[in-house]
Amino acid sequence: MPEPLQKYRVPARVIHWIMAILILCIIPIGFLMVRAELERSTQNFLFITHKNVGTLLLVLFFVRAIYRWRRPPQLKPVELPKIQEFAAHATHIGLYALLLIMPLAGYVRVRAGGFPIEALDAMGIPSFVPRSEALAEFAKAVHYYGAYAFTALILMHIGAAAFHGLIRRDGIFTRMWPPVGKNS
Image (cartoon, rainbow, N blue to C red; front, side, top):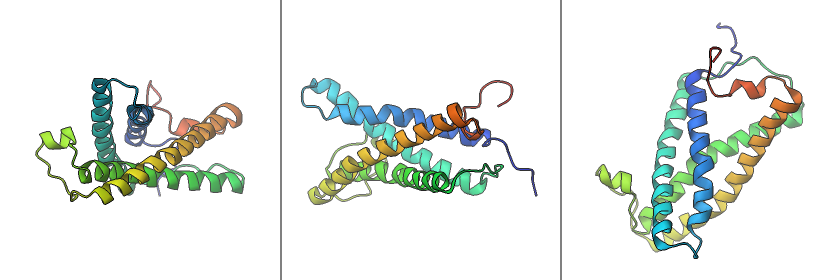
């Protein structure tokens, strides 16, 4: 049996931080792009960016899931109170669920509404969703409320990381820290 790792493997950390940066950009874009007072050209740019980054995040979700399935983390255990263990587990399940639900709901909303996803259209990838206003509205609601749930879970995740990194200093924070420098 291999020795437990001190940190997540470099590919897992790279994927995590690429997704984190993209998500931390796409969420404010999503909240901003629907504001009526924006110039139409700015709004169009934000919508195009949001749709295409969302599509990239869906691809990265599957890359991450496959990597995790093929190379599950084998980290040394850290003693945590049961409530923190439960909160961490529940938060991670919620984050993974929303990492899948949000881009899928966005995709369904856009395609069922008859709108383009420029990157997919440029590659000749057809819509896998029928045009349907009812389906588009349902997906829009899922995406809208999911954005608030996702934001809350991300804030909890960041708060827990800061707690472990700055207060407890128990090594949990450094496990996922970006792979930079000699001791990556």
